Length: 341
Image (cartoon, rainbow, N blue to C red):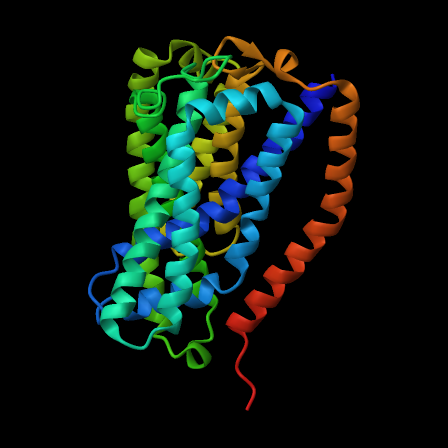
């Protein structure tokens, strides 16, 4: 019973990280594809003022997930880190380079320097979610042995992992485009010195394209999973199917709102689609933590440890969640309200 409760808490962190940090990674995708210095100036500036200091706080959820995993399921954590150390290392390096590139670009005045730091920010924003998606694919497809020390290459460069990585990148791009579209629509253009109308059209088109691209890859992924991970495919088309269907409906509803230029509930539906996909993966994986050879109960730490972890998580949530909400509200208010002179 308690291991299931702990896994539920763990997945709350996974979903939160997917929605919040995922949108930030996706912003790097649009930064990379914005074009040259002049053509991409305004789209990149919107990204800069949208991220602000808030994106650093989103990695709190990654720390939360890692602490939960190594404290509550130490044998599984050891198996994952000794098998998937390459993508984990690349992801960690990407997070560091992404932060450094973003900060240094904003502080740089010369165009060549800004380009170098911009490339570091954008490329690492693609590599990091790809690695996280590949890690999830390696775990779900059973390529992480219970004792650890699995193949360092094929454990994350395989059909299911590549599918997971590509979907992670596209999903992040989808979330970012929707959020940036909504931000542009509410932006005080005078205060931000941007052409808000042009940016609304710009990110609306990209949000629609990302939604279509994600849908196409998801459909193609059905055949990949059926061939490479039959158990995962069976569960996704079985008990997890209602979540997958609702996620698809949320995605279609998001596209309909984008087409009609309706802002209400747009971000909720976009985020809901992503959250339901992640939750569907969790339901399909249950009751296994690693592939089909290590269950949640088998990998769990003693009950005394799990009780402490849950207690600490509840207390931390009461402190951290209101703080994050306040941080987001202050960031949004500063972005949207006119400057005082």
